[in-house]
Structures are given as structure tokens and as C-alpha cells.
Image 1 (cartoon, rainbow, N blue to C red):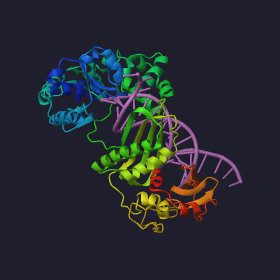
Image 2 (image 1 turned 90 degrees about the vertical axis):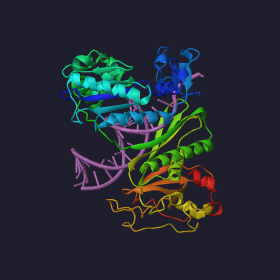
Image 3 (image 1 turned 180 degrees about the horizontal axis):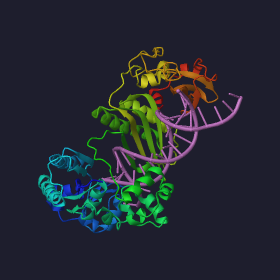
Image 4 (image 1 turned 45 degrees about the horizontal axis):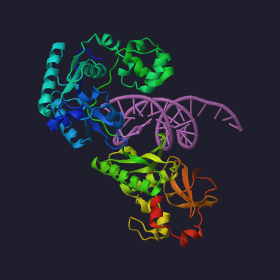
Length: 475
DNA sequence: TCTGGGGTCCTAGGACCC
DNA sequence: TCTGGGGTCCTAGGACCC
């Protein structure tokens, strides 16, 4: 918490709908809903005219259609237009301070102290905020902003919400608790439905109620980080810094289907599309990542994730797709899949040189050597490539290297079928089993020195019936 | 016609290392 | 031979935000 009210939170009012109304005169003064307009769509933004009928963000569009009168416009989002408007606003804010934290497409914190030239008295920041509001409306062609100014992010954020739309709230230093305590706890960032319910059971309804709960009780109910965080926020004790640039931690894409899907071929095709989107965005950002995750939402809305972390980062859409397909192969999709997603995390801002030919050809080297062909152009009969540790990755701490256990290496054959090395490292080897006519089977984890692991000759079926390209891809 | 899409952070358990 | 604590990495799930 600062001595002066020098943090501004700028929030564009119903931005998506406001941009639509700006760009199309006939929409002005009418209820406008922007969001998914298909069967399972939800509302991204409802204009203030539509909110009067009860339409809200995150509400199913079907519900909004029921509530809003004839003549309401239901529009699919035009992100490019919103992004352009956002850029205009952010550039403008940048003229008031060198330190601007963009929180989302329509929201930012501005550090008014960082500029060093502003009058930080309550009167001074009030005049300043009025000017920012005027300039935003002018520069965007009529999109308005609400601004809160205070001594911390918390107070600024709550202030911007207090008199929406086109509002301005300046919280004078010293009055923070008086401002916060009458408000419902749900106004605090981090209090969603689950936390609200837990607090309600403890008799907590307002931020003031929350400030009366001892820290140990809060930690017990909400956990260490969440409990201490809310304990402090309820006291207006907030020193979270304004952070200019933030590095991405993950990149993902997902899709909800109009009807639940069971067809594995179709799901595989969807994974390819999602992986292509993710890979494209990774490459645009000069990023690559080691962890590949799929997300699967079942027909009943239960949602699971499955992930694998690889030794080397990648931005290759084909590789992402193949790993994602393998992960999906372990999920029961027979009852219907509502949503599927693909993500990449553990990001780094470089791409490891392709020392191992880190694509399908190598990951599935043994399959490729049976005649399915490899995408890196090696002859199908190429022996697996073995590199000394110093040429590949550094040796693991236990002395084993990736060269000891190569992905695709066949290691063991038992009642499950043939076992292939799927991943290795840190003294562990993960083996995937599959048979000639069965889908990829169980994955088992072995210690690298497990005597059960003995490389052996491939069974005959692999030589007689090389998998079709399609089968190889499905792995 | 219940429940999008892109993210972040936290927790908890198991494996492993020192 | 038994016991152990701290730290990191990985996986899975949950809550939350815009």
C-alpha cells in the first residue's frame, strides 16, 4: 500500500459490445450480445442495454436469448477489431507512465508514480484520470473506460468497478478499509463461487466480516497461500507490484463440439488442428516447450488432463499432435467427448537443435524402421542413432543418458505385446506396450537398471505387417 | 439447447537426489 | 541396517480471472 493514490486501474466498459456499437450505428442504444452464437456458446460481453434484461458474461447464449427481447443483436466476436482498439488504448496509457501492466485485452494498471511528473494529490490524480478517460473515448471513437485510482492494485481495481460504466473513483489514502469493508467478499480477487461458499459457511459475507477472521482459521479453511492472501487483502494490505512485461507460461487451444464426439478418427483430426494452432502460436512467439498436455471434457462435463514432459522443447505441430494423439489413446472416449484441448508448457524461448531428429521419425524410430517411412527422410532401415552424451543432452545426475534408452527402442515383450521405450531420464524408463491388432496398451515405468528390461528382437508380426502410416500416426 | 476459450496460480502425492 | 529431512521435478486436478 502506497502513501499516495498513485495506481490507476483502467477498465473498458463492455468492450466487445461497445466496439460493435461504435462500428455499427444501428446497434447503438440496442441490446447487444457478443459471444458464441452456436449451440453451446456463452456470452463474452453483454452491452449495458442487454444487462438490463439479465444477460451476463459467461451465461449460455441460449439463456441470454430467452431473456433478451426481439431486436437484440447476437454477434460472434471480432477479435481483430477489439485488439486494434486495445492497442490504441494501451499506447495512450503508455504516454502517462512508463509502467503499464496490461491485464487483459480491456484492462490495465497504470503506475502514475513511475512517471515522476504527475501531481499525486487526490485532486491531481482526479484531474489526471478525467483526462485519461476523455482521451480514451476520443481515441477509440466512443468506447468508454471506468477508472479507479488508489494506493494499491486492490483499491484501484475495486474502485474502477464501483461506478461503471464511464465511472471514476479515487480512493483517498487512509480511507481504504472504510471503502472495502461494507462490500461483499465476492468483490475481492480470488473469491469465486467455491471460496464464497466456504466463507459463507463461516458466517463471512462482507470484506469487513473477513477481516474479523483470525489468520490460522483462514489458512485452515482456504489453504496457506489463499488464506494468507485474503487475510491481507481484507485489511487493504496489498503491495503487489505493477509488472510491465510478463512471459507466457503456456500456450493452448481447445474446442467444444456442437455434439459430443466418440469417433476416434475425428478426434484425432481435431487434435491435429489444435496442435497446428498451438505450434503456429509458439513459432510466432519464438517459443518452444517441453510439456505437452491434452484436456478432455467428457459428455457429463467431468474434465481430465493428461501430460508428458519430454527432455527437449519443441514447437513442431506434428510432434505436438503425435504426442497428443498418444495421450488421447489412453482416454476412454466411448461415452462421448464434449471438448478437447492441446497445450504446451514448460516454455523456453529457444528451440533445441534437432540433435535426435526430434520428430515422428525418431520418436517412433523403431516403427519407422519397419517400413512405414520416416518423416525426416532417413532410410527406413536406418539403425537407431546413438549419440554420446556430450553431443546430446547432458548426462542425468545418476549417470544415465538419453542415449542409453532411446525413444522407440524395443525393450521387452510380454503378455501385453511389444514394449517400446516411450520416455526416459533420471534413471527411469517409461515403456509403452502394444500388440499387432490392439490399440496402444499400458504404459509402465521401470528403473533403468531393472533386470526385467532386456532389449530383444522384434516379434515377427512387426516384420510381416508393417503398420500403415495411419497406424503409426495414431500412436 | 445449461455451462467458451485463453490463461494463471496453488495443492498434493510420488519419485528421486543429496 | 535403519532412519530422515529438504528440495526439485512431474503429474493431475481445482479454483479463479477476463
